[in-house]
Image 1 (tube, each protein chain N blue to C red):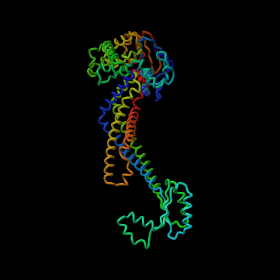
Image 2: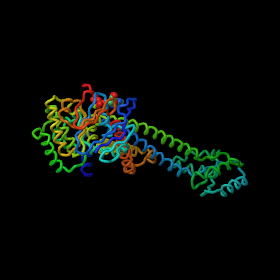
Image 3: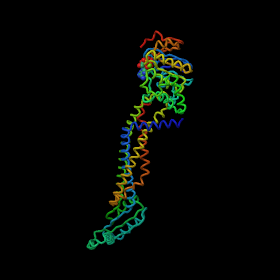
Image 4: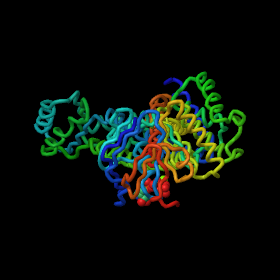
Length: 299
Length: 231
Ligand SMILES: Nc1ncnc2c1ncn2[C@@H]1O[C@H](COP(=O)(O)OP(=O)(O)OP(=O)(O)O)[C@@H](O)[C@H]1O
Ligand SMILES: [Mg+2]
């Protein structure tokens, strides 16, 4: 008996969707639109997360630039201070001359352009401190600032902090946009389903008098909503996956190396994207249909 | 079968539709509910169907207190009561057969049982030949017989009819009364609200009269009564 009831409910759900296919297009489009925007936001967030992690790994160094007239005592003091701190992997001292040499090396064949600089070398003596990660930097930097002989400190915590703040803005902004869109599409769905509900209000009324349960009456509409959600999420999974794949490939071809590092590869996110899309899509559909029926069930 | 104890109903807008109604209807009875327009007949029926809640008193159905029941249980209560309305309430996109079968489908009845039971009920209300017709191909009396068939197809112990002959000419009305009498003779308890003086007078059944929400008369083999103004 239960099985037959469930079969009836599902059949009616499909029928309702088919009868309402005109407005259904609007519902499905609105769900798809929400999910596609969600997809873009998600990819943005994931990429920025990847960028943050990547940057943290890259910028785990502090460079201390020293005055040219730094004394040996000052150098020892600085070195001792650094060695006494936690999280330090290595310290490398580079003199002005070494700095220039390594510059020349970097310039390779064009290194001769730097030839005249030995007379009046503009590059400073420096310490390069390799850290376990960037969070150990602050203590060292604060103390180094107060020490004699230190001219300038270069480290990238600010960059990363700024990046984190930026990533947070994207996350929060994205969530707000998505929440707004989700509400809008719940509204659209509920209005669509209201059409089926009201076109069947007579039937619903009779069903109630004959003793149909609320579940039996609601079932078909919830299924109609779920189907809209499912179709909408299927469409947007395809569009986002292939659309992003295309974008990803073309960026890769153009060898925008900085970009490719921060973009997550499409196949990595496909599963998560699908789960999230189907969950949100069907959720919007089901909630929309329940909202649409509230008024009709009070017989 | 049905018992009302001190039942009162005041609608949200302050209209006092029923005041302290006491009555008991036994299994197998045929009861007319009479009273002028606005007396409270439909309100009483709505209370039995759990469409409205009483403001006071208790209602029993088959010995069960149904005064305060959870919404979840209302469908169960309604399965014990077949209802027929003045305006038939048929589904226009379904045939006579489907309209009746529909009432069984929504309870999850086995298709075999539906195929067995629907023709039986249709022949009982003399509609076998119209089984595949749509409602707009039927006369008023046939409409009402379909709705009666639908009301009794699940074999409820009680059948409630709110002015079932209200939209029918006298001759057709008698046709409906014959069907209802048949059903009553098979053991179904019937409560029928009506304005049809001649029917009530001829049938000589129990009559309960309400005026302004008050039960003013309850007599076995009664008549429509002079105190009620025809509408
Ligand atoms: N939903 C409602 N809200 C407020 N008042 C109502 C409601 N339904 C009925 N009433 C009022 O309750 C009173 C009784 O109405 P009811 O429908 O029970 O009368 P009735 O005896 O069935 O009349 P009729 O013979 O015309 O069908 C009337 O005054 C009516 O206006
Ligand atoms: Mg009435």
